[in-house]
Amino acid sequence: MSIEVRNIQKHFGGFVALDDVSLNFGSGELTALLGPSGCGKTTLLRIIAGLEQLDAGQVLLDGEDASARHVRERQVGFVFQHYALFKHMTVFENIAFGLRVKPRHLRPTEAQIRDKVHRLLDLVQLDWLADRYPPQLSGGQRQRIALARALAVEPRVLLLDEPFGALDAKVRKELRRWLRRLHDDLHVTSIFVTHDQEEALEVSDNIVLMNKGRVEQTGTPDAVYNHPATPFVYGFLGNVNLFHGRVHEGVLDTAGSRLEAPEHSATQDTQGIGFVRPHEIDIERYAPGAQGIVVKLQRAHAIGPLAQLELEREDNAQIIEALIPSERFMHMNLKEGEILLARPKRLRVFFDDAV
Image 1: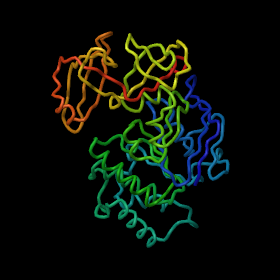
Image 2: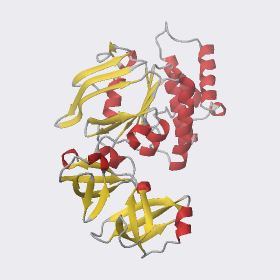
Image 3: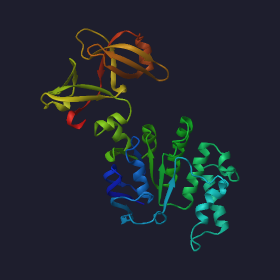
Image 4: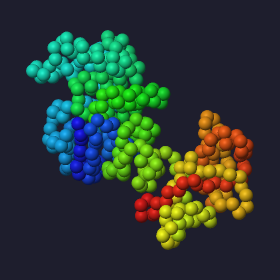
């Protein structure tokens, strides 16, 4: 099923939750709604589900206006952060619930229900837990049962609101890989809400990055990470170093250090900010006259494949974060307190009116 929202507006009193949001969600794709708390992503998900009424705009399912349809008519499966399982029912009964409350003329037979529940338990790899109760399960197991229950009614759309938010980091990582594999098998059009950048980048086909009720950027994980459209997107997706200065004829002058910005060769003396991710900074030993930013190595943390360096600029005391391969760090035999040169390998400049 394809999903489209057009010019969605939603207010809670004087608070603007969604401000003229228009989006297309491709059929069979897994899309992440990503952004900080309060940006509107859960409100948008609930409006698509029919759990929240919009103030203006349309929700279209397969091209048909579903804005006035009741949640039961939208054929949507919803998975909440805190599982929402019935504690007094067994795992089997939880999954069967949606099938048993269908109208009589649509309700499967008991034999069909048993067969379907066991197939779903096999799908989520928990068939051996059919007779257990939710309090007897781990958080990860409960979330997989919640997903099986949502799939039992054969939804045309699967909506997940922070599905792994209540789980610890290791279980989260395992479950998001499992969700990706499950989606590849089922190809149900799916939208999930998260504020975890790594989760969105790893799991989704497409990302919708939201801020203050508006869409900042949409695209594949590669596109939004490597080609951020706005300063907000750049700053939200991972760590970033900021270099304030003036751009003139392809050079950003920042506190006396000159950084190349060739794509702005026509710019004349304009205030701007250079954005550089830590892994895009190269480090060399200081040599008089060499191009770069003179820094002092304040702290180094070299555990694992990457060494994290905390560098202090000599000209304005700004702290710069850099990531270099641990092998290079060991080979250079860098010492805290040493004077170095930092040189951005890639610089993206935004001007003040965009920040």
